[in-house]
Image (tube, rainbow, N blue to C red; front, side):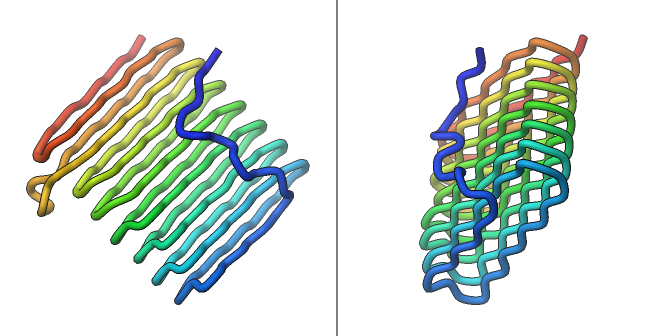
Length: 197
């Protein structure tokens, strides 16, 4: 029913794993409370990487993959049952990502590469899907969904060279069975979608 974006759930078969390789100043923390949860943190050749995964409930799967990343920082929190989340950060500078899911059966994916990205996904209810893909430079994206069976995708390929020239995209959906997508390229773009019923 839902198509899930950007290779969601690749490399998430193990119960709990943290695998730094050639990382510097890394902090990888996995905390799990419940049953049948799986989590993976993989850090390779980064600088000041940080990754946090906290899961409470049952049948969650999550992974944070950081490769050749400068700075980094990722957070995943999942509460409820049957959520899946992936954060992938490659070859970037000062990247940041957050995912928070509560309820049942949500899917979320954040992919970041490039310079000065920021992304956040928050989902509440059941069976919502969200994906954010950021490349280039100076992108900011946020997805908030409350309800059931909603789907949202943001794709950004920025060319900005400062905070003032960043792309901004926001999708907020309150209710059930909404679908929305935003695509941005260039710089200094602003887009928002708000749906409620």
